Image (cartoon, rainbow, N blue to C red; front, top):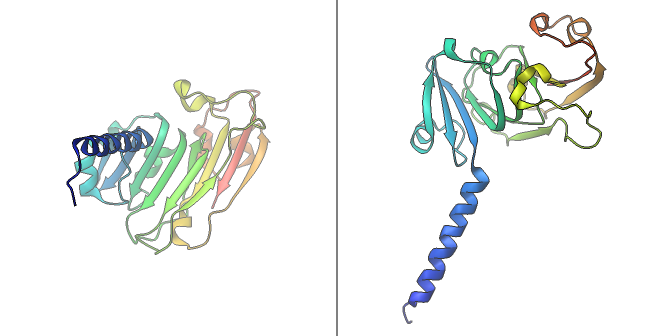
Length: 218
């Protein structure tokens, strides 16, 4: 068999570069945060990293260590993935944070308590419990941002104060092998009064004459 011509090598190389560029563009702007041994690492990743592979994340992503006291309220316009082993840091990272696309991966066999996270603006949630249960990743679409969405939308630049969609996530769902479920309550004008069992909502500065869509995920 004759060896490939120079033209063939050029074509194969060009196709390889094209495929790599497409893959990189498709995976760009992903944020990964993982907690391990009382440290928090925040990474910017250009490709998906296998769940709970800490060594690969440190190798393939641009990561920095964050002190728990230095964690600031922020917003995420790209995909946010969090690997965790318990709930100790999740409230600090996610409560009243504006996140559109969130993936939570449990990286331990720990049993989690019934604690609720309050997340603003959540459109899509994915959960992985492979370390605890040998089950596939689950995905849930909370709202699609279609025409039925209220005209006033949360803006990332102004942060969680403009949040109109508030999701409560029951962390005990990671103990079960059942499918993700959710239900929503629309036109909730007083979040703290309508849901008195969530005491930390008293710190949520609700704006006057503002209606919320509240979703419970369990």
